[in-house]
Length: 124
Image (cartoon, rainbow, N blue to C red; front, side, top):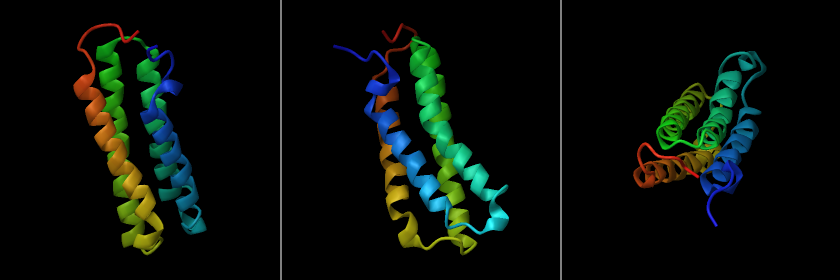
């Protein structure tokens, strides 16, 4: 039995876990960042599972690859924004240890999926 839906992908489930974790961490940001860093990091985190889902739903390897690369870009955004939040004193390193671990794990998973994904064919 193959992948019927993006919900069957462990990487998608892990990405939704990251998004949930980012929302939790972002609660520690000051109210003045509500429309700045808080909004930006939340959008980037939601973009990761959203891109995985959209790419898989298109059922074509080339498009799936494109969206997986987009997800990797969004992961880099989240990582950068967490770094900035730490530098600005909004978070302690201990506050983001789990989140950063999820980012690293997802990067590895996405690179592995990209390496195993056939080029130019249907993903069904």
